[in-house]
Length: 158
Image (cartoon, rainbow, N blue to C red; front, side, top):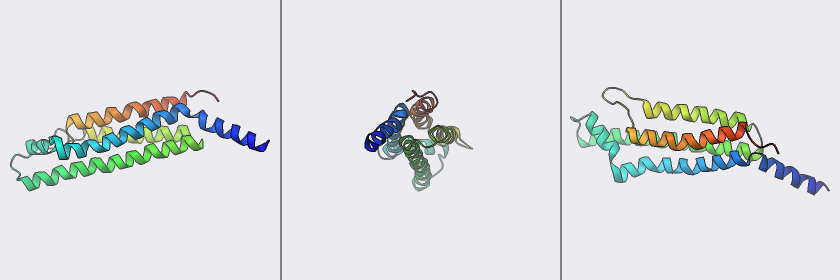
């Protein structure tokens, strides 16, 4: 009898946050894509390098490469931290522990960080990160994040 009660309890615990978990899993996948974008740009597209060259036309190739690499590394660091946030939120949903607080906090911190990075600039940059890259990452991650928050706060009752 105890076994049946534990099975039912485990099912209720895992299905209670099913929509939230699904949005978080999509977020994890999109975060991996967003981690790959700066690397693809570095190896294939070259828009970050052109962005740096446009800001500093007097720089030689090695200085441009250093600044380009700094931008790519910063995006990768933020991306890895974002991936950790998605995974922590997913863990909370699977354990049924502080789901609303965890998902909401991670969403606010992540979106604030992404908005700051996508929009931050300084002389001579309009934005440190090329507009297409910053806005793509921001939009790709905001959508599942918002879905997870809404699912956490307006979930089905189990």
